[in-house]
Length: 233
Image (tube, rainbow, N blue to C red):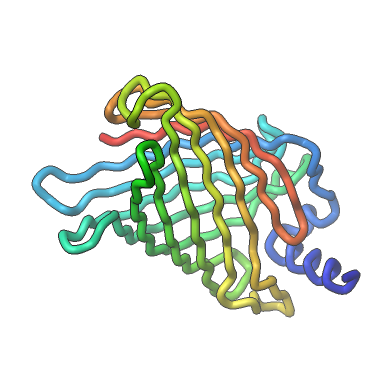
């Protein structure tokens, strides 16, 4: 067990600038993730686009954890349910504490988002995402992600404008290549995110959510306040 924890710490150091490893992340300090998600289906076409901007902090205010910019082209096939995406992402990661050093990552990804109705008030979505990652200072590697989302209306029979709803999700991350170069290695299991929130659909196009997410890795187990806007143009 001791050797496993030591290996996990080495892996975390390989993922972040050196100063992060010198300053232990405060797991009791509530972080903050502030996010905007958007999408657009083109008129008279099965194509569209989607994207998101996320500002993540270690302490809920100005200590940068990540700035994530992501977007892609979507397609809704006639023969299959759901929406399928080819996209790009750029991520800038900061260090916990006073250091202002950052590390960059570029990604491409492929995604399937498939809705499912369960009973009268259950709205599920299954998301499968495959990422190709180029992290500064590391070898190329991949990651698989599966997320299950559930929205449950509270004051309406459906998710119509004016509906408050309970939003839940759980997402599992699995690494593809474990060798990241320079003698560094990551575990097969990357992380898990468990989330619960209160949502409000303020129009046919938009909704907001305020919630809490617990992210667990082999090294850090930290809570995050999440505030998100979801809008369809």
